[in-house]
Structure formats: structure tokens, C-alpha cells
Length: 68
Image 1 (cartoon, rainbow, N blue to C red):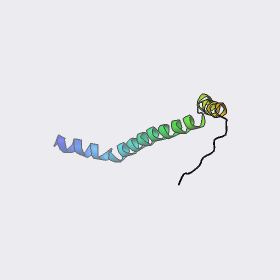
Image 2: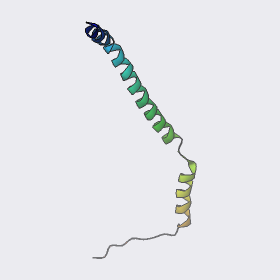
Image 3: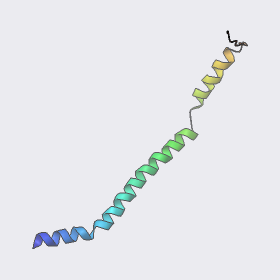
Image 4: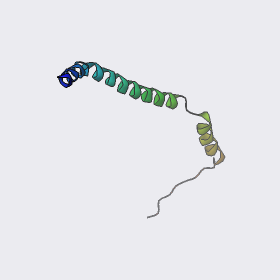
């Protein structure tokens, strides 16, 4: 008899535990999304400066041609 009472008590908590679980999943997912957006917005300026520096060093004009 005590086993049936225990299962009934756990069944009563099922909806509450489901909501807590979904809250935790949404919390982890939102932290991941927000940190990804933060790192995209606050990208390091050194990487973009190096790209522009490479372009300015090789500033001589190059013409392309197609041989038939």
C-alpha cells in the first residue's frame, strides 16, 4: 500500500517538475544565445585591423585577363 501512495505523490509533482525542467532548459538556451550575440557585437578590433592592414600593403593595381 505504501508503494501506491508514493507513486501517487510523485504523479502530483509531475507538472511542477516539468515546468521547472523547461525553465532550466530555456535558461541555458537563452544564456547561450545572449552570449553568442554579445561576442558577435563586441568582436575584437585587432582582427579587423589586421585585415585592413593587409589590404593596404598590397595596394598595387592588378588586372585580370582571361586567355581563350
